[in-house]
Structures are given as C-alpha cells and as structure tokens.
Image 1 (cartoon, rainbow, N blue to C red):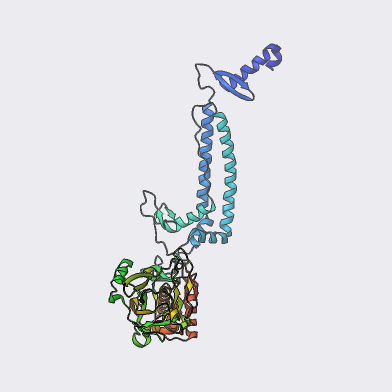
Image 2 (image 1 turned 120 degrees about the vertical axis):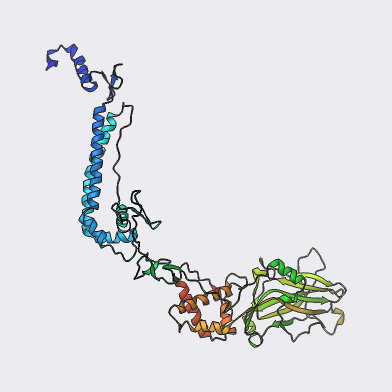
Length: 525
C-alpha cells in the first residue's frame, strides 16, 4: 500500500530498505548479484549476515531428528518380533552371521517389522536432508561450521551381528558387542564381563561335526580327517612309521662324497654279483655288449630290510693304448620282480648327475667310474642291471661326434682295439628296517578295524607310507608308483588286492582337507 502512495522515484529505494531491514535486521544493507544476496554489514555489526538464532534452531531440530532415528532403532531391537527371533535361535551350536541370516529369512514377522522400520527411517531421512540443505544455505557467511550428525545407516548384517551380541554377550545389564573374527565379546568399560558361554562351531575342516552333550562350548565329534583333542579338532596325522618302515637318514651329501672317496665299507650295500658274460677281475673282449647285475635277494636273505641307493661305482681297467671307451646303461629294480619292472637311469640328462672318473692305476689304466645320486636322487633298489658296451674314442678333440664300435671279426686279431676288465661293481647306500607283517596288519584293518577309529588311523599310516615311498621315485614327468611294487614283491600281494588297497587310499585321501592326489606312472604289474 505504501508503494502506491510513494512517488515512483522512491519506490525502489523503499523496497531495498524494507528487504535490508527484514534480512539484515537494520544492521546492514542487502545486496543482490546474480541471484546471490548477502548483507553488507555496518562496522558496528560485523556478523549481521550470519543468522545465529535461525542456525541454532535448525541444529536443534536436526538433533531431535537424530534422537528420533535412534529411538526407532531401539524400538525395533526391543520389539516382540526381533526378541522372538533371538529367543528362537538354537544355543546348542555356534551361529555365525550367515547362519543367523537363514533364520532371519524364514521369519516373516521380523521381516515385516524391519520393513516398517525402513519406512519410518525414510521419512526421517528426507526431513533431515531438507533441514541440512537449509542449514548450509544460512551458514554461508558464518565464521563457524554448522553442527550436526548425519544419521547412521544400519544394514541387515548389523542386525545379524546384534543378534549374535544378544546371544553371546548379554551376561550383564548392558550387552557387549560380539566379534566373529576373534570369537569373543567387547564389553562396555563399566561392564567388564559380559561374555557368556559360546558354543562350539560346526562346519567343515577343523570345525566340529557336533558339540559335546555335557558342555556345548567344547567339541564332541570331529569331521573326517580330524581327531578330537581336549574339546578341539586337530588335523589327524599318521603315527610314526618306524614300526613299519624306517625312512630317515642323517647322511649329508658332503659326508657321502667323503665316504665315497675313501670307499668306506660302512656305506656299501653288500650285493650278489651275477653275469653270464664276464667275471670280475678277468680281462675280456668288450666288443660285444656285456650284461651284469647286482642283486640282494631280500625276500630270501634280508626280509626285514629295504635298501636305498646313494651311489653306484665300477672300477674299470683298459689295456694300454686302448682306443675304447666304456658306455654303461643302468636299470634299477626297486623291490624285485622281473627285469621289465626296472626303470632306466637317465645319466647326464637334465639335472641328473653324470659319471665321475678318477684314475686309480696309470700303468693298467684303471679308473673308478662313480655316479652319485645323493639325497636329491636317492632311490630304492633291489637289483641294479648294468649293460656295458664300448665305443671308439674320437681322435679329433674338436669333434663332438661319437662313433659306436661294431663287433670285431674274431678271425682278424689285428682289428682288436684293446681289452677291458671290471675289478669291482658296488652299490653305496643304506638299508632300512622293514616290517612286512606289521604292514599286512595295517592292510587287514581296512576291512576289519580293531577299535572305533583304528581304521582311519591305519589308512592314514598307509597313505603316509605310500607318499614317502613314491617320493623316492626316479626323475621324470610323473612319479613312478613304487608303492605298488612294494606291495607286489615285498608283501607278495595279488594284483586284485593291490588294486583294492590303492582304491581305498585314493577314496580316503579325497575326503581329507586340502587333499592332493599326485599322478603316478605304472612300473610294476
């Protein structure tokens, strides 16, 4: 109305003064530029552009909304639906958050109540963010930041954890917080002992298969591959194998090398030399292939031992000025049987060792030829087959070509290129105690266990024997199945029995935690 009374040249000034009075409280002038208005304060009122009273009112409203937010959560926690869910949770075993989520998913009442909570919180959230926008607009020119707390979202996993806390950490008036990672409670400072009895955890692997009936905090039964020990499940480990098969030695490679240089009899495995082609200590014409072997005949003479080869040595003599050079092919039979059940020694192939030659007698041109397997390549042996042939030494030192010698015409002695003599053929290593009857007793328990649990113990021990025997398999893309050879030739088991034992071991091993079944190649039929 005043604008109609005032002359036109005063109207704009009147409107500006009125807005300044309303917005700046007579303490400054309202200036607007590009839709952004602010108060240019008078020197006596430097903070006229910060509406402190309005800001405090908004902050108070936000605090009330925050209390309402917390109140809704408290009401949900104290609701009949949530409390009924907690009471229905089983206490005879430990429940992790995932297990509690399954019970939550089956409870329609608590889900409906949770939806109501979500609806109420959405309304509060919209009001809260609307007030926050207003608060920031009013606080633009203020020298302090607005004071408020954003409402904290509480997801479903929070309520599953809260149910855990009420189950396991509510021995005092104020419940604590359950920590699934540490399997314990964090209690309020004024309530030092809020933790109750926490049942044993059921599950796979080291977790229990069932809690003890008299004390649910301790385990009563364990999963496959684990054994109960003082209320806890420990990995089931095979007992010591010393009663069945000794597999340990403290002999180091440097010690072995020293003993080999001395030809120490303490590391020689005394064997029987057999050859139809030659005799030890006698000169022979090496133009034809010669076969010789060292064997132990353990089943007849040493039934309580198995034998490990660490080195093989031959002392070879050549006549003076001989142009021949010996070439050996070595086959190793681990536990007996036919020659076809032997494996070929890959001398100087890949990382496998080569022959080492040391001169013994220069006049007779005798050399010790030794191949040292050491602890890396050591292996079981029952028989060692040596096939000896000769080749002509290359006259050109720069030539890498090897020319193999053909059989001589015996009618032309002038073509004879020398004679050869084998003074000794020795295997160096050690013998291990072996109890075939005790291992047969273990095998018998696969079908007729003595006591509850003895079958699992027997299978574990057989698995350990199998893996440790196969560990001494010769080099190759896959390991050879030496364990089958042991069963066939040292225990004298039939093929069908061996197949049944191997099948039982594979089936049991597949059930063990972190099971790894190594592929093996067939050696013994």
